[in-house]
Image (cartoon, rainbow, N blue to C red):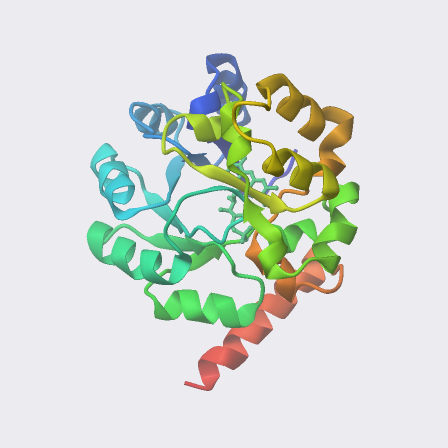
Length: 249
Ligand SMILES: Cc1cc2nc3c(=O)[nH]c(=O)nc-3n(C[C@H](O)[C@H](O)[C@H](O)COP(=O)(O)O)c2cc1C
């Protein structure tokens, strides 16, 4: 795959032992978990010689993850794309940093440029975990989401709780997170129907498989993203912008 260090991710509510075996065989330097108490998975990660990173959405989850022995904690604010909780990045990160000291904390949620990275460092994070910004790269394998991400304003990226009416879905379990995506006509129609009239099978059919364009999964940072930038160039830009922002202190 690569000679360089890499990380692999498994969301706890969708944990499958056979997938974990494949992950273990790949010998990642970091194994990351999210969306529920990692429990004994921390020991499993350490047993394969990996550092264990875990993403949390509030302080209580962070304290529990620290007690489990994780090596790195990602404090993910509710602005994030994908599944997220209720607390925004700005209040969450410094609280998690204080609660789990000296465990290193990464900030996630709503960061789309170097100023956001600089802000995360000011909050006590040692780095960031970015998702939505990297969807807007030519390399990202989600072609149908790119135009909506470039067009959307931040307020178009909403928490869609109807997704949790369909079980088993990751957000309906564990930390009780809700998926955030960009409003589309199909999604608006589904949101306007009540919990009683919409069926889980309809939700899954409308949003998965070939219908993925019905809900581009992305966070509130979409409003700040107006061009596709190759991943390599993006990382260079982010570092240079962060350095510039930090030098203005
Ligand atoms: C399309 C998409 C899929 C994601 N899938 C996962 C996942 O499988 N596992 C995970 O731990 N986090 C996942 N995340 C969340 C990211 O790890 C990260 O917390 C989030 O993207 C940060 O917020 P941002 O999107 O505002 O940058 C996903 C995010 C997006 C946008």
